[in-house]
Structure formats: structure tokens, C-alpha cells
Image 1: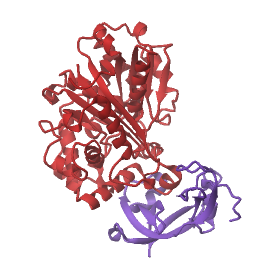
Image 2 (image 1 turned 120 degrees about the vertical axis):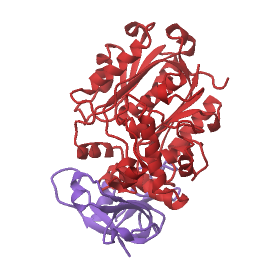
Image 3 (image 1 turned 135 degrees about the vertical axis):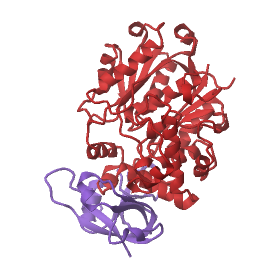
Image 4 (image 1 turned 90 degrees about the horizontal axis):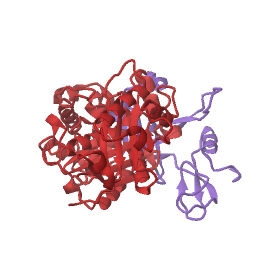
Length: 133
Length: 390
């Protein structure tokens, strides 16, 4: 990161395509934003630096989705959860590579980047999931 | 008497809730408006109503936006200022708040406020997709999250932290269907058994089919005026004595807690303080039971019980008709149905019936103070209104 990239969701997606989870750290108050924001919601500063976010954490809560949106229905039932990473950042996502009855609050997980499915349409965002450590 | 009136409700209307085949949203809204006009013969609607606020969530359903003007036209109120409010499932709770502000400001003496949604002509997959638009797109929807999934994650967290059981969730559904069986306008007017609720198919574990509210068509409306003008229009008004609204992060994942809705707690605090009442003073309430867990969390956020004890409240039948504080006597979103944009003012309609002794078989005896709690999305918007018998 050269430090010149804008602190946007689009830029975060580019980083994720390269296998990195990045947040915007407010240089004034120190808050780490995930996703990055153009303005700090704590102190209104626009002065940020990129900070790499740990990819390992633990599961805070979860659900097993049986009725899914059309594009995910072939994967159902699947687990979705909210994971708290080692620096405290919370990220929602799918949990794969774990038997559904073994998914438990507190289980250690790490993020896996899937890259972006090429398409002509907006949005071209990468997907990711979590897997047991 | 507690609570200085902010505004008065002089009339109210509600369409039939259900699968209303062959009807457009505007036609359903006209049905609700007609009831409100008929209940209030002293009101000259064309002359007296100075503004309309309409809650409506999605133009995707009917390929129809610009709902404010559309509904004013079909309610026979052409040319008055008409504005749509959108706050997902709290769209008409937010409209009610704006309508209260309009009357309080002195800009309009009499206003109509309502809500409408026509949903059942769309497939479940389409409705699921449209409703999900009320959640965060890049990190929730795009990664495979659904609306039931978000509330299911709250349920899992609540069960883990407080020992709330899947049976407690099912008991909310059984109670609300019991109430709805007495509401001739409810979508699903049938009682269900605990066994049926517990064994219904899983939508997003731990939530099953009977933990989810219904996809419904419907419309609702109220007519508000200044308290000093209420008697001019009716000898049976009720007063709104408290109004609160708050917001939160669009993404559930960004929040401190997954077992409570901060926006609802803030809105409730504002409304209680404005009304000068405590949670114990509430005699009857309509809360946003889009999913059964949401009703349990609502009890806690509104102070009807201590944090973590919502499940026990329903186990002890405290919120059933005849209990300490009957909740969702209309059947709630669960049994009456949830035409999302119409829900907030449909809750207020039930308060109007209860506080004017018109709730028939589901009447709460001597109810003086009522409360409605309307939530948008996974809690990024919440509105709370408090009502008092005149």
C-alpha cells in the first residue's frame, strides 16, 4: 500500500482480492475502521493510514441458513456467522469446511479469500469465508 | 392524569390483511382511508386534511415509487402535500413521527398518516431479496446473509447468553396466533400448537417457519390533529403522549451487542420521558415481532422485564391477553401479517381500538396507556410511540 489509495470499500475489495484484510486507522483518535471510511465517525478526521487486520478470530454468533437467496440456494443449508478477529474487528461471513453440527460460539476461525467472480455487472466484489483453524 | 397530549388520533383505518389477489397497493390504501373517513363523519376530508405521510418500503414490489402522491390521489386527497417516508419495516412508524412533528409545528392542523405494501404477488425468493435490501449489502447480503438469518444470529446469541430456549420462541408464535384468531382482519386467523411451531421447517436455525412473520398485503392509516381540535371531529379520540425514534449501524455485525437493539432502547427512553411514564404504566403494547426472538428482545429493550428475562415473560403468559401486559393483541406481525410499510401505523390502529374499547374479543379491560414499537431492518431504525385514552 503506497498510502495514496482512497479509504473506500472499493479499495478494501482490491486488497481482499490480493489476500489481505485492510482497515483504515484514524491518525487522530486511533479508531480502526472496517470497512474503511472517508471520515472517522468518532472524531470526524479524514486523516487515515492503512492497517492490516488479523485474519484469525473467534465466532461470536451464527445461524444455519436453510432458505437462501436464489444465488445461494444450491449451497443451503450453510452456516453464517459474525467473527471477532484478534484486533477486535467484527466481520460477518459464511463458515465453510466445518460440519454444521460442529459450528459453535467461541470456535476459532480464520478467513479465506475467494477472489472475485468475473462478471460484467456491478458489483464486482470478492467473496470470502471462514474456516476452522 | 399522566402524559400531556402531543397530538390526538381522531380516526383510524385498516384494510384487510392477507393475500389480496387482484388488488394494487393504492386500492388497498383506499380501503384503509375509507374506513378512517367513515369513522369520523364530522371530518370534511377534502377540506380539513392538510397533508399526507405514507410509509412504504419498496418500489420493487409493484414497480411503483412516488408513493406519497399516488396514495393521496387514491385516498381522494389530490393536491395536498403528500410525502413517502422509508425506513424499511419501520417506514410508517417513521411516518407517524413525521406526522406528529407536522401537527406540533403548526404547519398542518389535520394530517393523515399511513402505510402500505403489496407483497404477495411476488415469489418468496423475490420478497426475500427485496427485504434483504434493508440490511448491509457488501458484507451481509453479498456474502449470503438473509433477513431471517440476521435475527437468527440474535436468537443464537440470546440463547447462549441468557438460556433462552427454542420453546420460548415458539411460545411467542403460539400466543400471537391465539390473539390473531380473534382479529377478523388478521392474515392468519388460526391458533397453532406448540408442537406445530417447534416442528415447522427450519428457515434459518434456530428460527423455523412459525418464528417468522407473514408476507402480507395491507394498508393502514390514522387521522391526527391538535388536542384542542380533537373534540371538533370526534367524541372518542385518543392522545399520543410520547414519541421516540433512533438509528443504529446498518450492519448488525458492527454493533456492541447482538442481544438488544440500542435504537429501540433510545427511542423507548425518549418516549417514556416525553410521556412522563414508566414501563410498568403500560397496559397494552404492539411490538415488532418480525421474528419471535424480536418480541423477546423488545420486552427487554422496552423495560417490560429485566435484560435476559424476555423468554421467562412469555413462559409465564405475562404478555398473553389476561396477563400483566398483553402484547400484540392484534396477532402481531406473526399472525396479523407484516405488509412492511403498513406495519407501524397498523400497530397504532390496534392502540386506537384498544384505548377506545373497540377491540371486541381481544379487548384489554380498562386499558389506559398503550405503546407501539416499530423496528426497521435488523434494528438500524426504531420508533416508539405512547398513547393514552382521552
